[in-house]
Length: 369
Length: 197
Image (cartoon, rainbow over all chains, first blue to last red):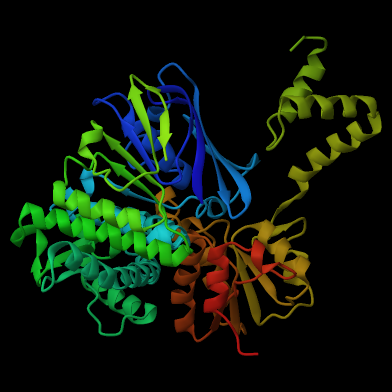
């Protein structure tokens, strides 16, 4: 589904906005701290109910208001569909075509999207936690069932940690087994996503950097059995957990499991974080994003929306041009924030709309055709 | 609230404490009771009776008026026990009519996060019931939540070494359910637990 219109009320510094989007390129332009990313964030919320920034619900609501409303309209096939999200301090409520959404799984999958922001570039150098967050979001966007397993895992982990903190052994075995079982299911999903996207990544990287370069991602966990089935991984994870119980009791926390795993980024078989130049790291992440888009397109039958947050500062002219060419080839709806139109490689792009943002107010400039 | 009557205000106030009852519903209920003196009297009596009469069975910890309860003292299969979290769960299994054994109510599920440990549940009582008994099978019917699953595993770990068969309720598609309306996690579980035709 593409997003035709959006209506925003009391969201961050945007008090009121009603916009019609181009089905291809939408360029949100303005100086820093005017509300460009807020607009992008509101679109992201319509697809995921979550923000790509950290923070509480209250932070999303314009100061002085009690709630925010974001309403988006688009077409799914020939049927128009309205997705609305109302945000209050106490929580969010979603509506599809005016009807409240009871199960979150009914909400997801309507508007699929991929975000590309400077944080993604930092991912390859950052802590494993950042890469896990990326991985969770990416796996989820292609497999909505991932969410419930992830919730289950986190809850089991919290319970097990509570027990470890108390230094209590009674009942620990049951929680260990549950954690190993749920953890294994989580790992299998992460691994199958990583495997699938790895081939695409290599292909796109060669397209950017030339033949002979080999980019890889690998899911790294402590469970090193050759058999990667849920049952085998669960067994391996349980063995590792059991071995470390004395240490875990001492430290009061679970030391092994998918919450400690990492996504390894390799260029020509060497870790990207230490052995690659900044330029190579950027190309890598760019290729990874292209791979993610292609993966989601295959998975859902049509490409996701792409939200590009201030990427022009991160990508040089060549990479920028390369990426825009890729986007032009795909029938994608793209939202780009930038401080200046000159930063974007618009040559060859005819169908775009521009949205100047100034102090929380969003304007529309005539769509170019 | 206008203070038209002290006793009516009190009734509304008490009704409002019930789960799912708000101001308007409480008002409606109170006026309904006011208009039918017979209902009011019966309701008041039954409220007093419920606390005087109802208690937990000393064997299965289900709700009963006589101890042991009618299931524990009745002509039921003594060799199978179905373990549930709450008394309501016992009623749900009983309503199905598919179970002819006896029950054991845990009164909760393990949840270290909320401070519920094995000693807080009727687990020691269950194990005592198994000692030197003729019980062949324990059916674990705790909820399919994170806590319910962990409780089932914990009980399994305690009971299996005693040489008693331990089973767990199956999960999957609801009867008469349209596949399209079932959430994806349930479909996933149903696929994992599929049977050969």
